[in-house]
Length: 389
Ligand SMILES: *Cc1c(COP(=O)(O)O)cnc(C)c1O
Image 1: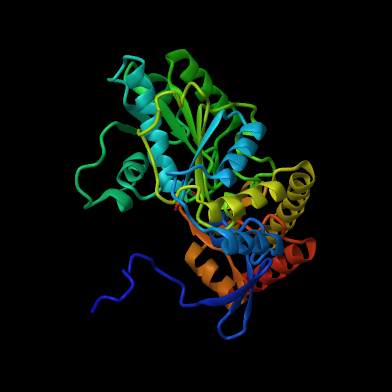
Image 2: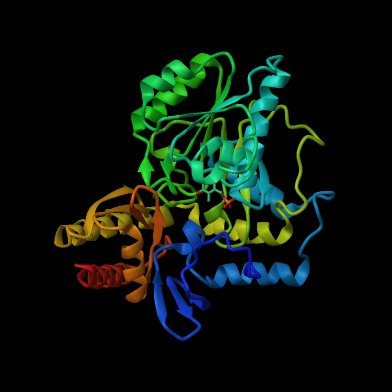
């Protein structure tokens, strides 16, 4: 008999009743160190007092009005993103998937309005993850995500990750955009080499195509800059964000230049909940806490320390771990044994990590994890590795 909850997840049989900073407290009282952060979502840990206050204050005042009316909290948050990034304008969604939908629609509408309605093709890459809607699975083209789900949304071309020559020869007068994660998350923590991102920008400029960055996982301070592309100095035309921007309250966004967004006039897109007062009250507080040099340099310092300790851990346990990769606090450890066994051994030692493709485990701790908690993480991973070897 089918479970009452649709069984689309291979869940770990464990549930939590409370969170405190970097810790999750299970229903049986066990305390787990959380290196997954709800998949890069709880960027400020669990039950951050200022976020709790922002949410509960707003909850006492007004939850929802719909986008029929102006939402001052939304405008305030949009202004902050516009001031801090390449973007001139922001649309708020509830998720990364919805951000993908709009990014694709926006790019196509731009060319339609330019009198080039045939320019609909979006170039994407193997190993990509952009969400689970019909557009987002067509973008990823992974068999697991698309098989059995009928005709795919047309107009996507999925190329091998890292094959720049192939990319170069693939742009043509039907190309609307390149859509890429600066660091693939689900795909196994694969950073795009700086030169590739620069090259993509140049190719887009040469062909008049748009560059769409998916920073749903790598954005909002995760790499030690507000957005990952800032490390390279390459600017997108459109960017998808979500996950960390709401720290657990569902919130996503599409950021865009005025030019790229020029086709999105009144009535062309919408969302009932997107950017509602509750979400934006949290989003504003998250932004204020993360988007400043003090916080981000702290992330960089901790990331350097964590990585150095992980390198040493890997050297001690070469039968279990192969190598570490990633940027900032978006780290992946390539495993020498099955990654699922490593995650499960972690659970036995009260430390939560995440699976990714390419036999990687992901380490995506809260960005405000303390140095002592990093030490504790290393000793728990050490114990888990000992139990495996
Ligand atoms: C999680 C993720 C998405 C999808 O976001 P949802 O909020 O799950 O819809 C899209 N792109 C990337 C890179 C992601 O990591």
